[in-house]
Amino acid sequence: MNIRENIPISTLTTMRLGGNARYVIELKNPTDVPTAFSFIFTKNLPFYILGSGSNVIGRDEGFPGIILINNLKGIEIISQTDKSLILKGYGGENFDDFIAYGVNLGYSGMEALSAIPGTLGAAPIQNVGAYGQEMSQVLTNVEAYDSRTGRISTIATPQMHLGYRRSIFNHGVNAGKYFIVSVTVKLTKTHLTPPFYTSLQSYVDTNHVTDFSPKSIRKMVVAIRAAKLPDPAAAASAGSFFKNVYLNSAEAKKATAKGIPVWDGGKVPSGWLIEHAGLKGKEFFGFKVSDKAALILINEHAKTYADLEKARSAIQKAVFDKFGLNLEQEPVEISL
Ligand code: EPU
Image (cartoon, rainbow, N blue to C red; front, side):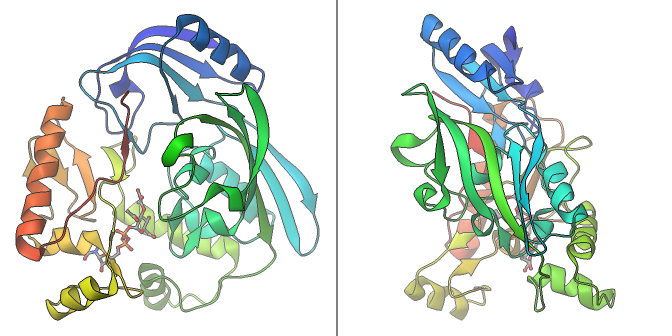
């Protein structure tokens, strides 16, 4: 366990913003978890748990407490049959390495989540989903340290109340209280079958793909993401910067009448709204709306959260003025 002082949050997060954190502790072993929390209690400071910082934004005032970085590594097979694989990984394991492990053994369930940046421990927190698959479909349980009781317990999926980008770990009284030690999923020896999620289906059609094995789906998703989403190592961003908009049936009717696409009875792709408000490729206060995928905001040369606020407001206003819909930020912020 390594404790550092006065570390810029901009160096810990892929959007590369944020002032100093008072302390940063990197945890590498499950035994580091209680040790780190004793340090927190001794110092009597607030704490914030971070994975690889790919969906988290720092503010200019920094964080006057302790940031814990979950770097617990390891993948274990719990059971394997011709039908299913139960796979456990530690919270700081790279999410995509964990997916590759299951895919290479020929099991399905997470292949469409390939190439999403971040750690495995963060995946249940916001119920990561892409191209028609979602953590909720494969997750069996997590082992988590409850900072209030000082104990590690097993939490089963139904207890997590998973929804669109939400769970008990990021909403309500339990938000931010659990440190995810490990994540267990159940994968199966099946194949995804068409029709696929729109952008995956168009890739399949264009490239005349007929192999829908987990390996093949993974390969396609990696190619789709590489073409559209910036590599965090090359361009500073936090992935999708806005959530898609969910409408009730009355709102959906109105939106459809205005020519706005509404999927599955209520989902409006925010990327479409931003693109059709004419913002694709436009720059705001040092941030650029990606010219490949309008939902992605790239930090070109901004240094402050204050500039991000201005850019966010400008985009929200343009979309509201044109379509009467409110965009909500997707990445979370480190704050007290
Ligand atoms: N669209 C446009 N213009 C754009 C981008 C999108 O018109 O510039 C429209 C298109 O109609 C497209 C639709 O939006 O068909 C959906 O776009 P896409 O399939 O690229 O997905 P998304 O809604 O932009 C969501 C997730 C992504 C995830 C993809 C794939 C959210 C906030 N984002 O994006 O997750 O990879 O679906 O399933 O739900 C992330 O959260 O950081 C993230 C990248």
